[in-house]
Length: 182
Image: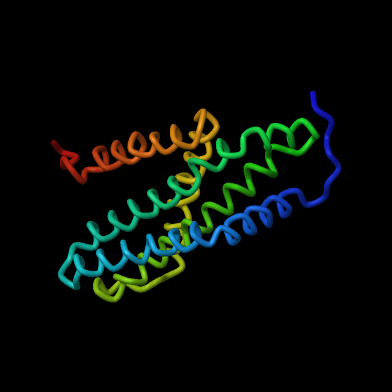
């Protein structure tokens, strides 16, 4: 049993701390914003008005999963000792986990939207509230799965090694490689 720490707004404290960490590391921030620009540009070269919307949607969902998982899979393991110390002081694990979940899901949503914006005109599908809700409902579970994997990993390298183990079955079982009826 750890004593409860009486800090108000712990969620906002950890959320702002994450924001500061990511912004201060300009290399990380730039690479995270460059990734959807490159992927979006490549998808804009692939898809046109004659492309199947199902294939375009699958590509976008796959990108959203990739962004969310790759952002969240190291979030716990890279600062495990610091977090354990905070928990011993009475910090609520729920506030830390929810701040990390909302932060990584929001950033993954931004990356997904950048990717989508670069090829949306080619396929003729423009943003609607339903599309944005669907994308949000894609990145949140993927971010949660990444955070869960991050708790099991012993180091950030091991956490990264989990990524293909999560993404490849999704591709294989989604019908993208083998049609579902076969």
